[in-house]
Length: 380
Ligand code: GDP
Image (cartoon, rainbow, N blue to C red; front, side, top):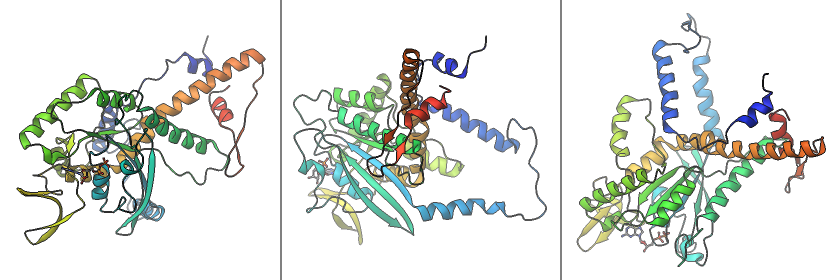
């Protein structure tokens, strides 16, 4: 007897985390093969080269224009104990005074418990707009007892997925702001002794929800040898605890790949932040000045700041968003809808009739049918 769609769905094991970089590699491999053959693997037909000009070669330009007009949005979360230089690094990353004396970093404002604070800034570069949301977590790891201090962070990430899921299920889906957290910079104390239990616990709890990029804070406090050893220890511990950090994928261009490999090998990025401008050899640069010398922020011989910024903003911002949407959000959505569907099934068995619920959006008064949406999807 063949299974109905719904039975087939319930027969499935609950989903496990799908953040599996090898899956992405396989997909990339398939696409490469298609590129080599010059046709999709399944069709078996080579594309027909046109004699004249129809105009669809211009399609990428249409997408380009539309994207520039719409602008981009990105949400970056920074987590780590206070005083590790998170606010300074954010200012340095985006060459902006997101935090200043009038509006100091969250560590200075909120202290007692772990809180989640968001700050938004609209940045413009060469006509391209980026709506950047920085999510800070002041108080993280600062208490005597830090058990469950990751909970507000997990709740925040989930709440943004929930918001997005609800927005998707609305009747009117014209405006769907994407406030999901696309990347989490996790600051590790430059102790030279590897990860602390809190670091391991945090990353293990969050790695299926968000792209984690580990960073060594205040890298100027270590010698290059100490830093190298520290990185090795951290990577070993990450592997030992089976923590899945964000893997920077290969890009299409071979030359670019070679350059990027060198940057990728610097993970976990050991960074230095500074808001002070110093004159070095007639050039004004962001740096930290000490009696014994100057640490330049944008000098790859001094620290990995430039590698981090290039990978995060220039080359992989879109991939971070893709992985958030296709892997982490998809996992959330699957689990959520599967649980709603299971509840719906139990209800149906009890009452023989489904009572579809509607919710009302507080802002617009618009009704949305998330339960209906999920049950309907699985044929219930
Ligand atoms: P937050 O609490 O994590 O946001 O840390 P802040 O950005 O407020 O920085 C705390 C202190 O560390 C400040 O005095 C900064 O000047 C200093 N600081 C920030 N980045 C660095 C760095 O890369 N190296 C060193 N040595 N100090 C830093």
